[in-house]
Amino acid sequence: MKRHKIGQRPAHKAETARAGLGQRNGPGIFAQTGPPQSVGHHPPVHHPCSPFLKTEVRDSQNKLETVQKESEALKTLVQDSQSKIESLQKENEALKTLVQDSQSKIESLQKENEALKTLVQDSQSKIESLQKENEGKKVAFSAGLLASGTGQTGPFTDSKTLEYKKVFSNVGNAYDSNTGIFTAPVRGVYYFRFYGHCHGGTTMAISLLKNSQTQCSLHDWKPFSNGNASNGVVLTLEIGDQIYTHLWKDTWVYDDPASYTSFSGFLIFPL
Image (cartoon, rainbow, N blue to C red):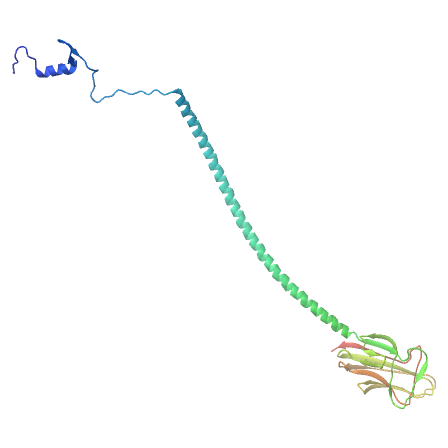
């Protein structure tokens, strides 16, 4: 055990006293320089908050909530708009398909119409051609010997072509009353008939000729009173063939307004 001198204090106790009491202020009195400090600890700091800032905070929170609600509403609106857009896009696609189908049908109908137009034009051309042919196939005539009055024709020193002046009909204008000759306008089968009348005591003889070739004849030799005769024939003619009648030489034929002496013919059918 260490001994200390009388009047001395242990060094560590003196240092502790100084640290606790601070500086000495006069004999035996130490003045404390500050409050006791605790190692590693700081007292809390309090900041006062004004009522204005609290109000600003609440307003900001309210605005934030409002903006959030508006944002949600906008999201819903955008979703609805997208749904409508998708629906419209689908409708547009369906309409496009419908339009394409309609265009295809229209093109098909246009082609059909063109074909029908061509067919109609061809039909009209054929109809016109057939009408012209039919007009050419309508052939018929009939004529009496004298245009008016009464009288004998003949006798002549040579055969003579009879000119039938009183024309009853001349469809197709194939008969010429100036010459007494019928000219075939179309190839076909024709029927011809001719009549003759004479008075008693005279001889009548008439032949029907085709291109100068006799086809058939009629004859009445000096009848006691009036005499009548007729004949007819069916002939195949080419276009331009000529048919007419000849009064034989030294014979007579009589006619009056009753047209006892006549010449007729018509086309039966074309070939």
